[in-house]
Amino acid sequence: MVALAPPGSCEPPLLGPAPRGRVIRIAVDGPLPISAMGETMMRDAPTDIRLRRADRILEVTWSHQEPRRFRIRQLRCACACAACVDEMTGVRTLDVDTVPEDIAITDMQLVGNYAVKFVFSDGHNTGIYSWDRLYELKNVT
Ligand SMILES: [Zn+2]
Image (cartoon, rainbow, N blue to C red):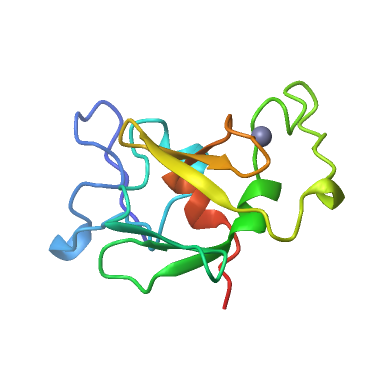
């Protein structure tokens, strides 16, 4: 049983001492859903971003974690810029069948401390991949 503070008390409900001196803590395991994180609690920047050209793989490592690996074509197909996804409807307008199997990344630029921008060999360079977004992409095993 959680003891709520009596009406009129200035003690915060749920966080005050419960009967018999127990303290009730509210905590969340694992990453919060984005909607609950707000804009000020973005995922930390990775510690390492490695482009493995021969394997067509981008390897991204966050501290104390196994590297996450993404196919270059997968990244291109997941682009969420206004040229690839309809901003009003959220429907993907990029026809992924037109993305070549051997597409490459020709340049990478950091965007502030929250994202990376890729230049792809098909000339596409408007996609910005936030750390949150990269982290949530399917990891190649
Ligand atoms: Zn795009």
